[in-house]
Length: 73
Image 1 (cartoon, one colour):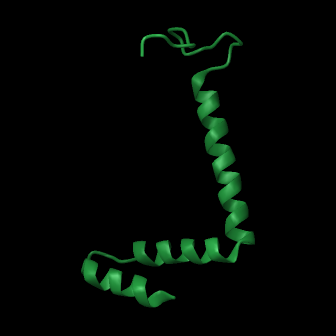
Image 2 (image 1 turned 180 degrees about the vertical axis):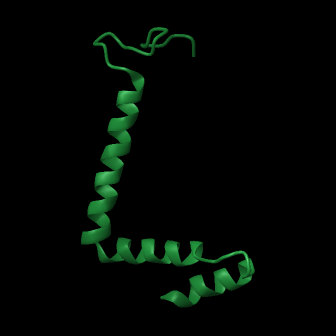
Image 3 (image 1 turned 135 degrees about the vertical axis):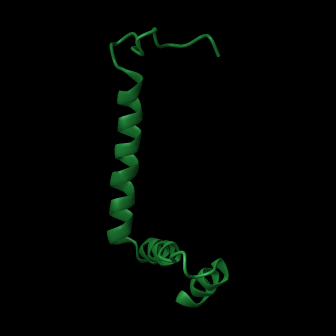
């Protein structure tokens, strides 16, 4: 693990910081998931199910949330 292409400041040979690579990867993932959310019905329904599951508050037990997950679609 000590053999790294980055120097002590986090720059590689071309002068690109490692966080720039991470930002590019996160941006590409965000663009793809946004596109899939609006253009793929099955992905959209999957995300809606996740949001419905996460919408459970502290007053509802986890069994209620699981029941909602199973009966949502």
